[in-house]
Each structure stands twice: as structure tokens, then as C-alpha cells.
Length: 194
Image 1 (cartoon, rainbow, N blue to C red):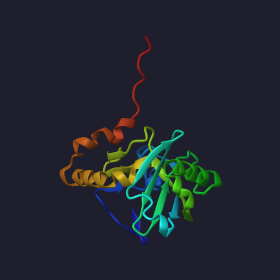
Image 2 (cartoon, rainbow, N blue to C red):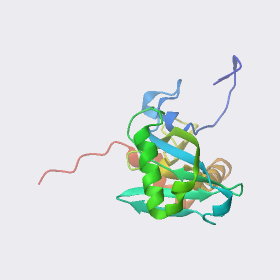
Image 3 (tube, rainbow, N blue to C red):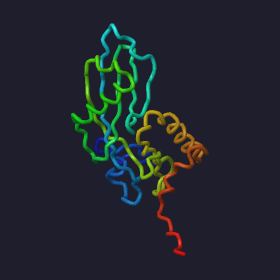
């Protein structure tokens, strides 16, 4: 590993590079986690003072099969999210994505249509083959993986960090994280044909 042009030695390295985890330079291809980028667009709105607070807690719902959430902020803003698009490393905000988020949020909370659109953004989340996290010792000795959280990265950051700390200090992943160990993607023998 290099830092500022100087080699840095480490017995253990935690690979937690989000959507880029599957293409970190210097890691052998067979040891890289099987993650792909999943684009998510989000919006930030400012609720007019007469309508505040529009909502007092996070609202989650599904509209026409699309998950949507609205998160109120103390300053009167509202965060709407998020699309889930299999488009590679595309971080373009699209009119269709903005429209879908506003339409779905308005279906849940109609007064959203009165808010000012303040900011749009698109980022890539790390998706695994089963869209569940990849947490634990990797295929390369000394490589520990913490990625693949898909839509739940922020929600699972704390439990993942605690689990990785347990692995690094006690040498074992906690039981509740073992189903998410990287080995579940190892090549398996095909089932015999009857």
C-alpha cells in the first residue's frame, strides 16, 4: 500500500471502498469482492415556513413498486430518496429520476409539491450479487472486506464497524454477521443432474 509515495506495511487491510471495492488497484482480481455500482438519485427540498414541520419523522413507503423515503431535517429541509438504477458508475442526475422521486414522495405526503427544490445528487452504492453486505475475512490473507451494503450502507455502518472491530481484535466475526461472510460467493460444485 502506498501513502504519499511511501510504502506502508500492514498485517491487515480493511477494504471498504463502497462501489469501487470491486476494482481497487493492487488487489488480485480473485480477491476483490463481487460488488457492482448501483446508482441512487436523491433530492433536497426546503419546506416553506408556514408548512413546517411538514413531517416530524422519517417516512418510508413503496409507490408503484418503488421504495421512497422522506427524511426531515431540523432546519426545515427534507431529503427525498432514492432511485435504484443498474447503470454502472453513472452519477448523472436525470429529469426522470427527479420526476419519479417527486411523484412518489408526493403520493405519500402531498404537500411535498409546495417545497423548493434545493439540490439534486446521484451517487453509486455497492451492490453484491445478493444485495446483502459482504463482511469478513477475504480470500487474500490479511484482507478484510466491509462492502456491498446496497441501499442500507448508512443503516448498517455501525453494526458493520463493530463487527469488523471484533474480527480484528478477537479474531472472529460476531455470529449475527457470519451469514454475510465473503465465502458465500465462493465457487460451488454444481448439483448433480438426476
